[in-house]
Length: 124
Image (tube, rainbow, N blue to C red; front, side, top):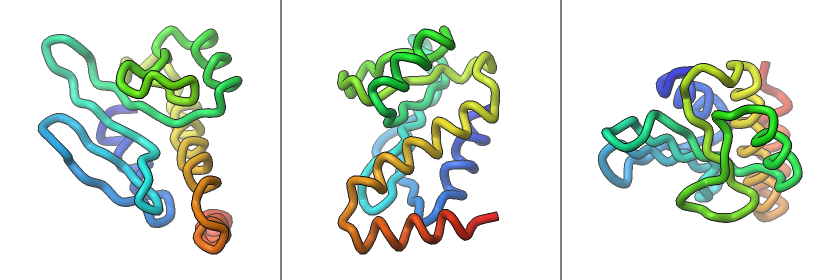
């Protein structure tokens, strides 16, 4: 996936919003909470996306794909950074983005969570 593909997929999730807090960085949120951080390449790093993840799954993904590692900024066990170098299959990366959205939605108030989960189930 390219950065544009990541952005398009993330924005296709129910009630996802997008903001740019600074140059080269795009935040994707649901319910006011971040589920993805897309960072453009610069002289010191390639294009990458940081996603929330179940800690056990995060470790598995890091072992499975060299392009997946712990997040430099979040420094928490439930955030992974994925280098967008094409080595992670597009469908796997889409699953990671969706999983991140799901993890954030799971932490929202029950009425909001239930509504968003229904919207997500109703998507084609």
